[in-house]
View (cartoon, rainbow, N blue to C red):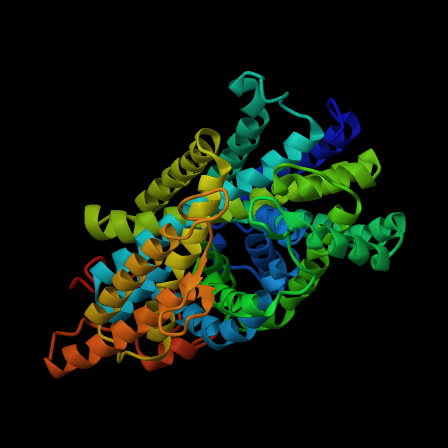
Length: 541
């Protein structure tokens, strides 16, 4: 790692940061309507077309942590880290089947969150609350990990001083970055990250295109890169006594690889920020188009993952794997282009962090504050509460990262993926059938959450006694698989069995405020208009 501050790279980084800051504040006037509601602040007026939605979803799903962590996983363990590529391919045919239905029913009834839909579909505030709390818990560490991405860039640029520097001076750049983020998110809502996403994704595509051509030329070609990586992975890891990794997953790891890819694909669009970006689009057709063009990001992700092998071949040595790719850019690129790459990662943190904080705030406002604290809240009051909560969420994530070890944030993110997958039966199941009983769904969710949490707690690693990974032996099969998927299967089994029991016992059903035609309605259809659900809808537990 180079000594001192890379002045040229820092200047380029600051230029792009200032540019997106200006854009973030100007976004308040972009397509702004007169009324002050969550539709306007939290969903951008539900007005985004195909390309804006594509950039917004891309900026939402492919974060700074993706930019840093996917190649870092390759750098640390080899091709097992490529699981992120097949899961982002699997997810798009999956969401093609249910996202248009969610958009239609949400547009018809004015739903802002997944919990709004669950409450309206099953008539259960209790189930809605469970989905909302799960969404908030899973989103918080995700926001915190965006900070890890920014910190990695700042560390490599030499900003903030060394480890012995006063904590305030060291973390001041991070505090400034998220202070600015908080300000323009509060002011502009979802329009800010939607506008900034154009810059973020353009920078990322440029950096990946240059890196995948320029770095291999400097390193002697891909043959040399893979040869050096293979040699490095064959060396014994002193902590485990086993080879460091492999260019291709060994047979014992194939169940882990497959279940992790499938479970991650099922979980991705359960996250609140994914749904927030989806519901901001102006028509059902926009969603369908996006499911066909979003795989372009998977191509980018595959190329991005190769940077992990390049870091090994380039001789990058870091104690923290998250620094491997920023350090690779610092070592291989001219300073000015390293600044462009660092800006891509930094802005790649700001966009999803903004969307995530908005999504978490919307869940609190609509499904905790309005449902349980102030049922008669006006649209303006909802917006005000959501703005304030979005600030608190960001502050919470900032405190989380600055006061705790980074591995804690990563552990909670692993748990977040396991937790959010447990909302799948209620959300996706509810989009296609009313057969599941609301109490059975709640019981299945609870069992999945408890099993997933305790199973993850029991996973050890060479450096951690608990929460050392997200894979464990699958009960009854004996293979090592993704805990989240195992918990999901248990969740579904409990839900189905209890639904039979409760239906046989004639347990009371909640009121379904939706109709079959609501799930195929489009914005231009006669009689389709956003209508806020009454405060008393679905009052039963």
